[in-house]
Image 1 (cartoon, rainbow, N blue to C red):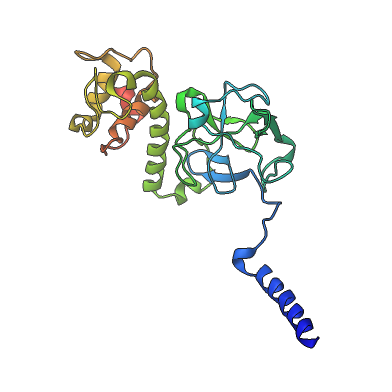
Image 2 (image 1 turned 90 degrees about the vertical axis):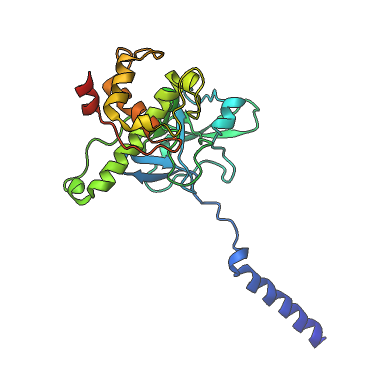
Length: 266
């Protein structure tokens, strides 16, 4: 009898010990779905628990997702899976959180300020913002529930002085590349290839001619022998962005072209 009782006690003790093993910690249902991250380029923006960037689609209407099929493969929805209702971390306005039914009627997509939230498939890790500005319709989301359409233009007093010049340059390069990718997809990819591999237009991947910033800006503005002029169609900012993008993609590393340099060429 004593052996049986001890066996039972041992079994109970074993269960208690297992419950406190790191690998056996129960899931916390209060883990937030939406958090706030900080970017030197875009300021505060929304992410999921793993730090993956969240986007809104300007063609959606309030609480009504419209991205499905192929679109949803590139822009997977943030679905409500863990909690009975979406939860936000510090900095998230709980009143702005909600859900919207997907067209399969069984999935709930998390919304913020009425905007259905999405991932971008090409974001590979926390902090990636490769979807920002794509097609002029996909944007990061601010804690206020608004599309972030521009880089941070103001910093706290003393912040610029504390930030090394190299970090500022890197932030500008990242911002222009993101904006330029959207411009390139819209007007350049059809001729030069989605990956700069060439086609009707010249190959841009590994092209040493891109080293000459003034030449490239002038070519985009005024056109060339087989290239139309885009000076009237694109702003100085868009030209600087797309030129910076092609000069720093597909093996090219030729640095930033600024708006001021573009203005000087016009």
